[in-house]
Image (cartoon, rainbow, N blue to C red):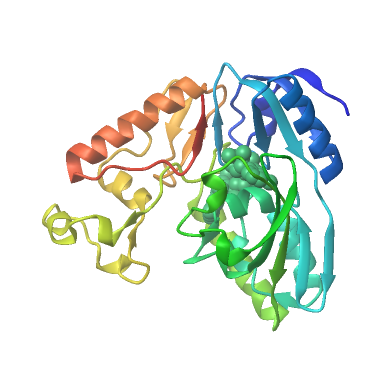
Amino acid sequence: MKIQKNILLKDYTTFKIGGAAEFFAEVNNTIELQEVLQWAGDNNKQIFVLGGGSNLLVSDDGIKGLVIKLNLNDLEIEGNKVRVGSGVSLTYLLNETLENDLVGLDFVTGIPGTVGGAIRGNAGTYGQDMSRVVKTIKYIDDQYKVVEISADKAKFAYRHSMFKESKYIIVEAGLELKHGNVEEVRKLIKERLAYRHETQPHRPSAGCIFKNVKFEDVDIKDLEKRHLDLSRFANHKKIPVGYLIEEAGLKGHTIGDAQISEKHGNYIINKSNATAEQVIMLISFIKQQIRDKYGIQLIEEVQIII
Ligand SMILES: Cc1cc2nc3c(=O)[nH]c(=O)nc-3n(C[C@H](O)[C@H](O)[C@H](O)COP(=O)(O)OP(=O)(O)OC[C@H]3O[C@@H](n4cnc5c(N)ncnc54)[C@H](O)[C@@H]3O)c2cc1C
C-alpha cells in the first residue's frame, strides 16, 4: 500500500483545475482498496474516490483526507454478458464490446469517464443511460465489505443512482448487451463523434455544467410566452440548458480564464489557468441570469468539491 502526499488534482481532472490531495493512493484491486480504506478509517481521514475526473470541479485548496484513484481495470466478456471493473474507461469498454460483436453501449460515445463514475451518475446521451445495460453492481460498503446487488435496487433515475446518496464505492458491474449489427453501430458512433466534435468545445471542461430541465418541472406555456421555442424538445421532454444559456445571450461570457463556451452554452471551458473560484462565480452568474429571465432554477450536473 503506497500512500502519497500532496498530489496535484488538476492533473486528474478533465477541467485541469484543482489543488492538491492531502493524501493520495492508487489501487489496482479490491483488496488494495479495502487496505487503503482501513488506513483512512484508522487515521480518521475522509475519503474521496476518483474515476476519470470528468464530472468534477475540485477546489483550488484541494481535498483534505485521502483521495483514491481506482485502477480496477478487469474486463471479461462471455456471450452477451460483460463483467467490468469500475476503473475501466467507457471508451475502452465500448470498443472491446464491439470487438466481441456486442451492441447496446453506443450511447456512451464521447463520454470520457469510467464505468464507476458513469454508474454513480447514471451517465448517458440520446435519452439512454447506464441503467439500460447494467444488471448487477458490486460495491464496498461503509464496513469495507463487498456487496453485490441487482441493478433494480440501485435507484437509477435521470443522472442519479443510490451511489449519490451513499459513500459506497463501486468496484465492478455486470452488463448485458446484445449481439447485433456492429458495422451499423460503428457508423452511428462515427457520426456522433463528428457531431460532438462540431458542437462541443475542444478545451478542458467537465462536460455539461447543469442538468437539462424536465418539461414537468416548468411552466411550458409561460416559457413560450418568453419567446422560447420548445416544441422541438418535445421528444425527450427536456429543455437543453445550452439552449437556455444561448437564448439568454450568455455564450462567451468570461470570468478570469473561465468562459461559457461559444460553441455549447452548457459547457464552461478552462481557457488556460482558470481557478475553481472563477468557475464557481461563472456558475452563480448563469444561475442568476436564467432565474431572472426564465424563472428556472438550474441544478448542477458537475460535482463541486469544496
Ligand atoms: C467533454 C465531456 C463530455 C461529457 N459528456 C457527457 C455526456 O454526454 N453524458 C453524461 O452523462 N456525462 C458526460 N460528461 C460528464 C462525465 O464524463 C460523466 O459524468 C462521467 O460518468 C463521470 O465519470 P468519471 O469516472 O469521470 O467520474 P469522476 O468525475 O471521477 O467522479 C464523479 C463522481 O463519481 C464518484 N465516483 C467515481 N468512481 C466511483 C466509483 N467507482 N464508485 C463510487 N463513486 C465513484 C466520484 O467520487 C465523484 O463523486 C462529459 C464530460 C466531459 C468532460
